[in-house]
Length: 81
Image 1: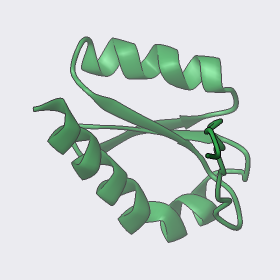
Image 2: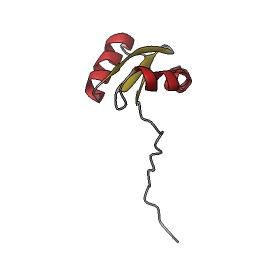
Image 3: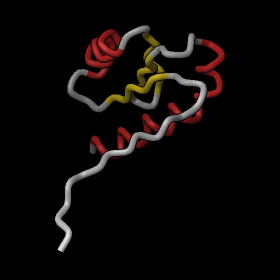
Image 4: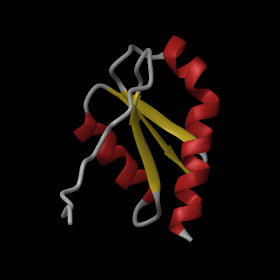
């Protein structure tokens, strides 16, 4: 199941984040597939390419390595009665 695979990849990223911050320049994009680090790349496009090459149609996870995790807020329109 791909949702479970993505959770596993995300957990692997979070567990390795302190090491990733030391090993790679901040701003690089880390790629995880099968709970293993594929690599870290300077651009999102390059990270995606390597993710698809490694995982094919299987789930993989791409996240930018930053000093501080940033929260993304998404607002959806709703009706007020």
